[in-house]
Amino acid sequence: LADKCVWANNYTSFCASPYNSIKGIVPDDWYKGLFSFSDDIWSYNTETETSKLVYDAEANNKTFDATNLTTDSEGKILLFTNKNDLTLWALSL
Image (cartoon, rainbow, N blue to C red; front, side, top):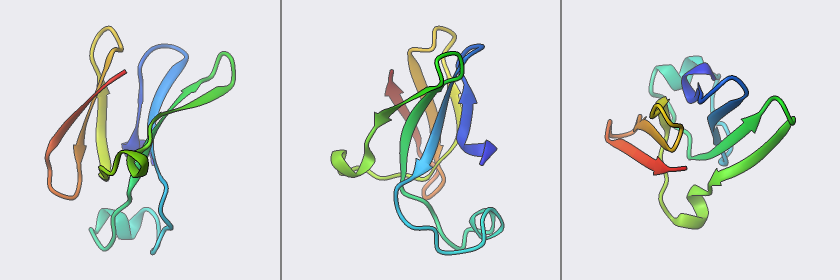
């Protein structure tokens, strides 16, 4: 979903990707709040065509349904909203 990604620069993006199974019609049921994701954060480099797990939510025992992703101007911090409770999160990249 576009709401779960952000471009950090010309070739690197960060996306929240669910590690749990999807239990509804995406994206409709997700927008309606009928279910939520438990997301990991991945980086994708379109220049090298590589991906990297940036944050493993399950391993860290902290889950969230990330949306509204943005980065700081230097691309060192990823900010997002947890759709479940509208809290603001920041991850150091």
